Length: 254
Ligand code: PGA
Image 1 (cartoon, protein in one colour):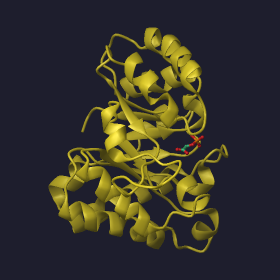
Image 2 (cartoon, helix red, strand yellow; image 1 turned 45 degrees about the vertical axis):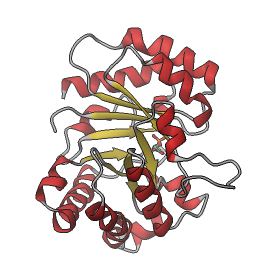
Image 3 (cartoon, rainbow, N blue to C red; image 1 turned 135 degrees about the horizontal axis):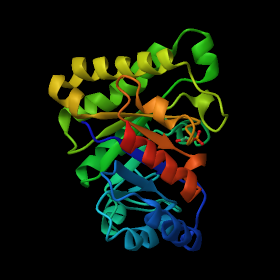
Image 4 (cartoon, rainbow, N blue to C red; image 1 turned 135 degrees about the vertical axis):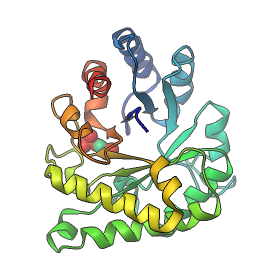
């Protein structure tokens, strides 16, 4: 659990040409010292380019931003877990707030995607987090528990090799607003304790919990020092190879 994880969610940015260009700039910038584990989540159309580009770099692993919960079928525009595995993907983001809120994904769909991912050999990175209104109403804890519980019920049936959770308050994503340090620590310890209750001490300790929402090269080191913060999930600041390499560097020094 000492090696931190630094994950880049490129969302709908960086097609194959830009992805290649990004790697050409990022890779020479990575220090030769011990590196954190780095996960890249490019758009699906850039997966093969990124997969080829990171072949020589064992610390960087590939993730897909979304999968369908069915194994195959007539689902125009979707990608299956097996397709992702076939191009070298090992991780999948599930339950990202943009999927939950813009695409109306329910807790039950999130659970089904987790189940399909694990069955195909993918490691889920499950995102949870409250909206601004939910925080103001005092329901942060109940929202996180609700989002977690259906997923943990699935995990207790099929255990993934390497699951990660991400606490991403919806109101902090892409806004430049960060929760107070104690609020992040409270949410992460809630997640850790809930895991211990539902899936046991060992699994709870071996699951990394990432923080995401307005992370950048100036705040990453402080965030990584917080209790139970095992890594970061970064959107906007992961698009620029220089700022992303500074965030990676901050994880080496923590
Ligand atoms: P942000 O996005 O870093 O741009 O706030 C984080 C995320 O959506 O995972």
